[in-house]
Length: 235
Image (cartoon, rainbow, N blue to C red):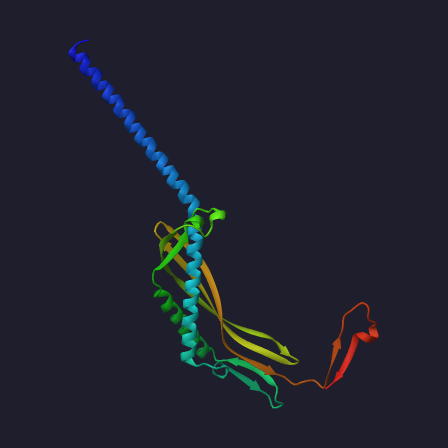
């Protein structure tokens, strides 16, 4: 074998070795990516669930504090929001709501909630390694893995009126404010959203009607005769 042929042979061997090395590197990278994807798919539900829970707890507390502080500052009573029309016989004929005052109160409470929500700071979410890996037997065990939680979201508000019985010819009237918020939790590489809803009692009263002179109580029970099912009570 001549010198030229020997040099060509060496180059061919080196080229083949280089190609094999590149192939091995490519295969190794693909395997590493597959392992990373498998780990991510395994731990993603745990991270998103924990982040969603932490965001919900934190946002609910902030919304409650914002509304409670605003209500304390407003000092609103039932009489400020509702006027009861009383007839000449002393009976309540109508319930009139001060729509303007009620909408102003709703706007003030909603703005207070939005302002507080916008001031949410980054939170540190710590998840035990055993929980993160999804192993039930090791759930809650192992060193804590920390993530930075950046919450954000928006708030919708709705007013409602509730009327229910509070006794004989007595009706309880409640004015409720419901806040619905969509909270987005952003972590490095992960994003999850959660819905929260909380209600606040703005005002209530019991509207008392005219008590009857007597009333009838009907008892149930197959063992009782019909003459024992009805009992009249005098006032």
